[in-house]
Length: 251
Image 1 (spheres, rainbow, N blue to C red):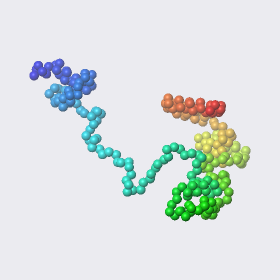
Image 2: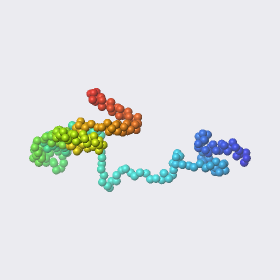
Image 3: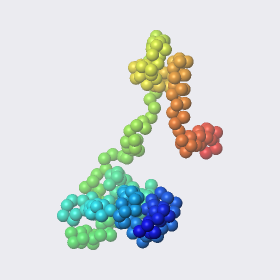
Image 4: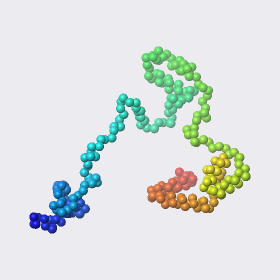
């Protein structure tokens, strides 16, 4: 026993068991497994504790059931979303959105009637197509002439700008300037525009902020820019360059 457990043998065993030692990386898989299950009390080296950071998968994790199926059950109501393979063309208007006086509505109806004949329309398909269109016009009379201005805008917030009213007097402008100089934080540009029923541009034209308030705003913006990373800083610089190019007419 003294010849086997000499000082060099103990040093080699401690290097093999210690995972942080550089010599432990050269151990093979079989020897590592043997040393892992070896009783370290006889050698004198503290036992190694296995953590969740090891590469071997845990059996408890394998027992976790997988995620539920993403497929809908056939016995329940479901929504089928099947988008087209490409974007729709701007030259094609669906039949539902065509006005009553549009000639494309009659053409689409005639093509649909003659392309898909059914048992109930066998007698109509043998008649004259002009009679079918006349019958359709009688059932769906046009409601006056079609006017483009009657179509609502795509977005309600993109309304045309209102005409200036010129309803503010000189006393109102002096009151606006006094409120702005008294407390620029409470009486902001937006609050003054709502109070006097005018635009924010008019408030900026009439009122000038105090140097102290402008300094506070400048310091706050500098603190915000100091937290920017290199990617965001480069993106903001490129945005400013694009704005200048648009104003010069280069884009």
